[in-house]
Length: 349
Length: 190
Image (cartoon, rainbow over all chains, first blue to last red; front, top):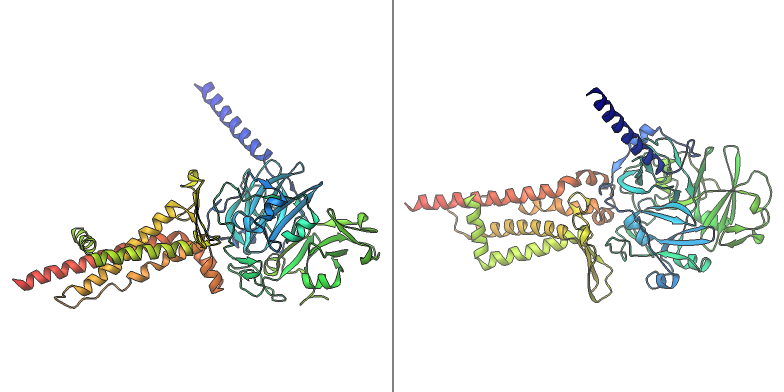
């Protein structure tokens, strides 16, 4: 009798451990000490999480994405429509904003790397993360108006803009970011004519001709810079209009946001965060910025810069270390990083 | 209960009240589906029907909100058809129609004594209109430009049941009032 109970206990324990091991094996690759300055404790972040309305997976992630050619996508995308672009090891992919506004996450694999392409319409932010063998879903909750994702292996919760788990067994760990580009379909297809484009055949029925929040082409509704946010934030900063798009990046030494009009005008901007110097280079074709660590006071000749599939190139650029950057609405960035440096209108020149 | 049945029989037996109920049901359902984002612009002018996702019919995407199973395109409109969302909308519309037609009937029938009509009948249908917006299509809150979506999202699970309850109570009150009327009428005739 005793032996039977013991064997049942051992079997149960083995099954539990096997299940846990399988879950951990499918957990996303993480950094134990993410290079993200946290303005609040994880507990404070957890306290500030709000329901966004839809339930868990009520906004369904795309788990089996299908792609089409540039010519096929040209049939339904206008040159001014927004896309989220990804270029990795010779492969280019475009994820139309008008599809992602309904799904927010695409669990994709590009050039042998499993990636989560994520987009939050309420904060205008598109960020890529490595996902390993696992997948991400939409929790239906928001932090500073920003999408809170969950990984399906451990159920840990990840605010997209933070990229750091605030709840669950991976709390405090950070995701490995992957650079995405927020640009227009016209600009993207000009640079990457061999691009594949996410298909509207997502497995779900949605009205992909309409954005429930407004429009980017032309700018309207929720996306207008002066329009008001819908959900509460942890910190407000009125140096810029709430929905003004900034190019943002951060490292352990601090967070910085660059106003896009200022970057367009300057072409190249230099700034210091903590003890470290950075250079931000405007890409006039994609209308985005590329950020590099730039420790020396070495000059970069704007006339010598070239823009191509791999981003920016030119004398001395290859020796610089790239830093992940992304575009985001100012109010959301300031909500997560109230001490952020702001370069441009309202901030440093 | 028999009072409610008698009221419903009276509403369904008169062409005028029947027409009022039908028009209100349809009008309210269309408004509900539009505010919740199931019906929206984006149509290309033609007529098209594709039903491709029946397997998702019972998948939830929010409190009392369900996945669409197909797309109906009619002129400039696109309807992402969720049978369960449509049933909920029609049910609310029917109850609102019943309340409005019942109110109209109460005013038309000879009154033996002064009575107060349930004035909240129309208001009862409002919470449900916000429910769709709180879940999936923040049309109203974007228009208003107010940071109230957070509050609405918290209330969302309760808005549709609240509207149903209020509309059913409205009908019950109307039926009870009509019954009192009938009994008072009979008593007065003796």
